[in-house]
Length: 137
Image 1 (tube, rainbow, N blue to C red):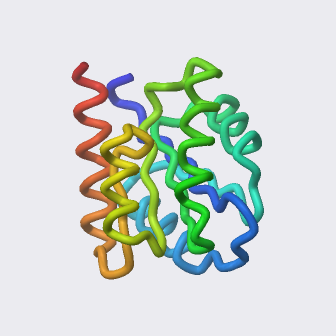
Image 2: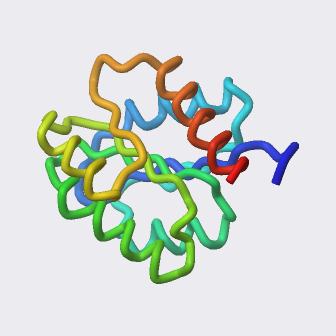
C-alpha cells in the first residue's frame, strides 16, 4: 500500500539469548522511518509467523546468532507460505557462514542475509529496496 510506513517485524528465534544487535537494528529501522515490532527473545517459528499475520508486516528480520539459521529460516519461510504470507520479505542477520548465506538465498528462504560488519545504512537501504520492488509488482 503506497504511502504506508514499512512495517518490519524483528524477531529472535530459538534459544539465542543475545539481542543487542537486534535492538540496534530495530532502532536504525525506526530512525529510517519504518514501523518496527520487536518480539523479544526465544520466539518459536510458529510465534513469528503468527505475529507477522497479526501485525500485517512487510518484512521479517530474523536475528540468529545460535547457528540454527539453516533450520529456523526455512521453517519460518514454510510457515509463512502455509499462512498465505509468502509475499512478506524475509531477511536474516547474524553469524552466518558465507556458504550458508548463499544456500539460504539460492533456496529462496531469505531475500537478504546480513553478517557482522554490514552497516546499518546497508541494512535499511536494502530493506527499502526490497519493499520498493515488492510494491511495484
